[in-house]
Length: 286
Image 1 (cartoon, rainbow, N blue to C red):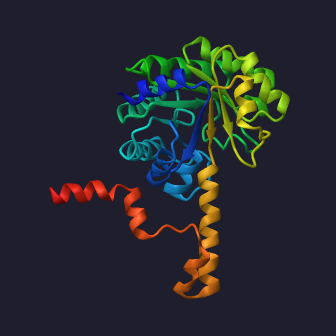
Image 2 (tube, rainbow, N blue to C red):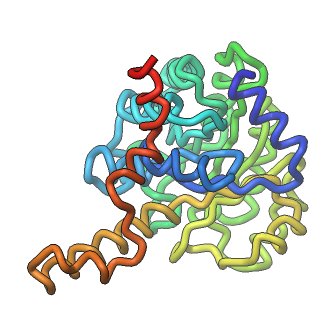
């Protein structure tokens, strides 16, 4: 089954889908192996893992697509990728859709920030005029070859031009063919819960731990009417904490005896197994 068709069926079958954010092949494999049905390739994580840079629009379309391509070769479940602003005008947007679609990504989200963009939960963002955003979404719709390829229109206007403008932009994007809408960074519980009531189409919530939006239970989010949630930084933030913990133990112990103080460390054989060593061994033995 094509990843885009797989994603569409998953969204039809499951009333609420959680897509943890993965930043590389290891984290993508972990999401799949822990039973999730969809992966979100986070731009924040991609910029951090591939470039060592913050999510300030510094990763190019080529670098983002390369990361997504590697991840699609690692897992079987569908991947929704961050496509930032589409990397330019309608022409660039068209190429962005073509490139992501051809590598086997199941869908992307496109935002209305001025390029270079910033993480949606940071201050001092800027957005393009509504008409330009809608035009880029229309170009993305026209560019896709597979009608199952999911297009999510994301607006960052709530923190810049106001909540009502963000709702209007989400609806305008749906009117020209976007499949889902993501109103980024609602700042109150009331704003967050009202988005699915005011937007006339399926909605996505981007959950960032320590971000601008209040953190609610998944049940409450689902009952509010959201269909899909991205956990953008859950693995990236956990990785930083795990790295710091392990390296602190190394510095404290100054010898290999520090290992017992890391109960969650995976031995080398388990790492290889998680990355498919048994299948590769079978190929060599045959």
